[in-house]
Amino acid sequence: MRSAVVLLVDDEPSVLAVTRMVFKLAGFTVLSASSPNEALELWRSRSSEIEVLVADFELGDSVTGQQLSQALRAEKPDLKTILLSAYPLDRRFDGRVEGVDFFQKPYECDSLVRAVRRHISDR
Image (cartoon, rainbow, N blue to C red; front, side, top):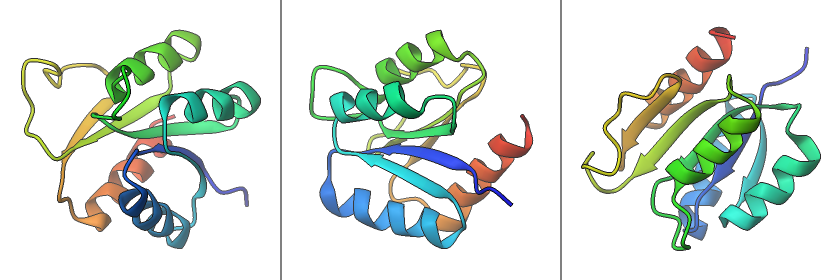
């Protein structure tokens, strides 16, 4: 049985490493990127496989996780997205975008894994 493919994007190396390990232990195939540019490179070569995008809202570049999601969803409208942030929801993201969830850090790893599974089962 093929494992679901998650594109994970976070500019904080420790968060990227821990979240990657959590997803791998949960049985997902994880493509990880530390910047929007790296994520776009992975997207170009593997977009047909990617089922869920999990991205930090603040990526330290001029592109936010939300903007990255919007760009990828323009090409693949059914791409499910989970945005992560240490900051609570604010005016930048109102949480009412179909197929996009928001998790505030710190989050429970089990809850994040369940959210990814829910998105995959919705397809």
